[in-house]
Image 1: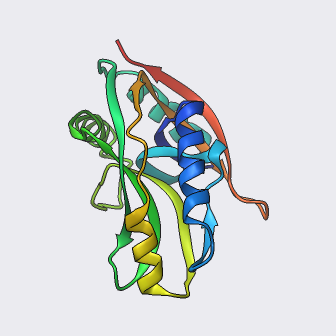
Image 2 (image 1 turned 60 degrees about the vertical axis):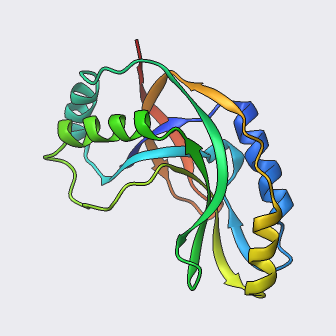
Amino acid sequence: MRCFIGIELPVHIRKILYSVQKQIGSKYAKIKWVAPKNMHITLHFLGEFDDNDIVEVKNILSQIKSKKFAVCLDKIGWFPNSERVNVLWVGLKPEKEIFNLHGDIEIALKQFLHNGNSFSVHITIGRIKVLRHRMHFFRALHEIIVRKEEFEISHFSLIKSELSKDGPRHIVLEQYPFL
């Protein structure tokens, strides 16, 4: 099964992010939007795992301890750069607690993690398929103001991602509550 470790978002945050998607629209780019129900903060993408490994991963993750913390939505950004835009995202501030959680998970699951990708704190909201009018697109992005809504993070989850022709379906396998 294909899995990742992430932080689920409250409904009111997903609604704000959906309104950001609507503001961006599709006038200047063809974008595959992330469905609000699938919006999350990825801590680690694990990839394909068999049932035996998932049992071990669950046990290891249950040992990670953290305290609840609050973050706030920040500005819109993109990966990898302005010349080749593939992903649109919304950032979070402060980033420290999420970075710490990411690091704790990375240390605990070192035998299962192989990608070595750099980590950035963000929520993916869309993937650019075709950028039609670069200058207008970036001008429009700079005019959008993301509502700086604060929310509490009280747990992280091990999530199974099933791919289908209708897009991914996320199924929470286990939640790990904070103190």
